[in-house]
Each structure stands twice: as C-alpha cells, then as structure tokens.
Amino acid sequence: MSRLSLQSTNDKNDEQSSASVHSKGGWLRLIACGTGLAVMWQFVLPAISRQPAVAERIERLEEQGIDPSANFYTELDAMPAAEQRIQRARAGDDDPLW
Image (cartoon, rainbow, N blue to C red; front, side):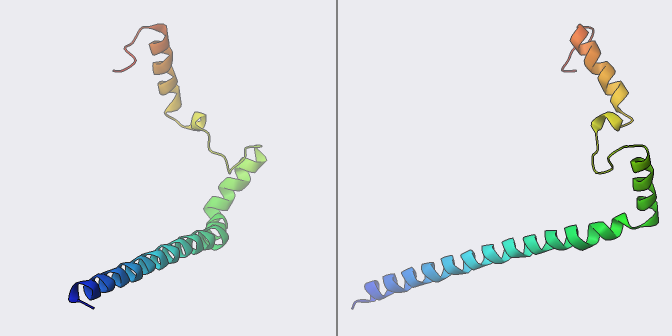
C-alpha cells in the first residue's frame, strides 16, 4: 500500500473515533442534565418549600384559595400601569410603538 492510502485510512479511523467521542460526550451531557433536573425537582425544591418563610406564604395563599404553584402576570404590581398604557394605545391617544 502506498503512503497516501495508509494516510487516508488513518484519517478515516480518526474521524470515526472522533465522532464516537462526540456522540458519547453528548449522551453524557444529556444524562448529567437530566440527573441535575431530577435532583433539583426531587430534593432541592421540596427543601426550599419547607423553609419557614416559604411554607408560611404557601399556607397563606392556600387559605385564600390561591394556587401557589401558578403565577399570574395580573398579580404583579406593575400591571395596572401597563394596562392603562394598552388602553390608551387602543383608544388612539398614544403611539403604540413609543
């Protein structure tokens, strides 16, 4: 065999092993991310919800019949001003883009 064909064969082998390494790295990252999410969901978030300040807030919201797992933009302090700007824009009193 000539040097050119041996070099070509070596290049193909390097490409295959490189692709194999990248494929394994992708799977390892996927598994690590999934494991991190599972740990966060199963252990970290429940531990945070048991903290006195958080537990008290959740309990107060549940007593008021508010679902503490949902956050509505209408509950934000800035919403009344934003709604007024939208109403002015719809009425034509204000330029909607500025």
